[in-house]
Image (cartoon, rainbow, N blue to C red; front, side, top):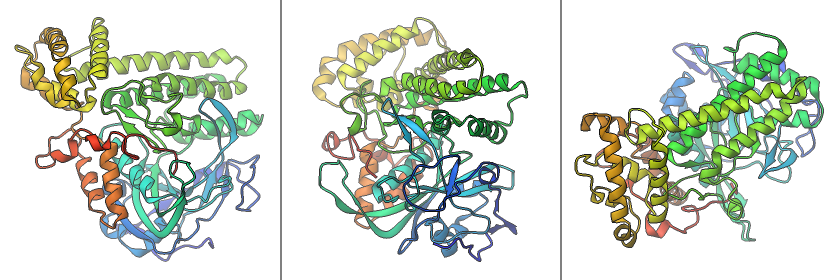
Length: 533
């Protein structure tokens, strides 16, 4: 595709959408313009053109993300903009490229990875001076695609589009999704890597974030011994993405920056645990340097409470990235980032404070989050045993995490009764077997909650602000995918609307908060997923 600009002016309120592509301007690019798989050295990015698609069509967009970019529904529907969001044209100021990074995958260093099917369009600045990188996922191959085609299928694109916005409205730091575009083409995928490839409809998501920089950007340069470029990337990242960081000696500034990265990561992980989100593939190349949830692949929400559950079929044997291990994996990933950054400082111990800070912040944020989920004013030491006993009971009894904590707000603290929470059980036999155990736990819980002396209505309202009624359960996403693949895209819009208000009851939409049905327990896409997309 030729690097061309559309005649569309990108105006809202007589103002052009402004691009300031600082990443390209201040960091070295790849001198080799060949768009073919290869190792890229001495550069942070490679120029690459998206591959045009046959018949781009806008399926859905986020009005909130559009507003942040000074766009509106009318502009989002214009053919010129849809063409840009499909990779078929460029708007004024856009410049397309893929970035270079490496990573540890499932605990092993794998070297160069890079944006294999993500192509950035540049950095847009809105009227408030906020900066957003725009990135197309599924817009064609790049020098980092290895043997892949750089495309994405509709099913994974729907999941990423919906989950990006669902997480935002849950109050969890995340990359966002501006648009979901059908390409009018098919993509060959072997969903479970079992030798049965099929043609699937293709799609492209436009992802939006202040930065898509990952731990792996720094790891790759350190592994290659390119200290000069590593230092340059660190300085750039601090200046652009952490402007609030105070000035100081280089080693002090590096240590302070790492502490901030650790703190943001700790808060992110506490949020994941609060709502029962499992990322599924916490490789270091999928860790955001600014503390966002990034790369929505085989993710899922815990249904029947199981600390060892992973949604990723690739992780089924080792369960490295299961629900309960996520905080420890984040710490391990931060250690790998510290290894890379330590090559720039005389004393590796300068970064130890960041890792300690991660543990401190995570513990504090986790306790605060679960005190709120339990309707307690503040966490007390003995609450740890109360929560641990609850988790074990939920695991043994196969209790739904989201339904349980939402229902807990309705328990009468003067007369706690397990019958109030019957809807949280998946199996009637287990509900009967563990009814007395739950009643005993509720008696302990009620005694603890009564110590706070909160009025019942106040306590319930506070709990409902942190315990979502609606999450993007895998079976719901799969239903939307099944319908969309048959030409009915209405459920995508319905889910997007429901997930905008995840803590509200939303009368008439109870079907979107229902527990996983029995038919979805082991169905592909509803219980576990592969990395194929």
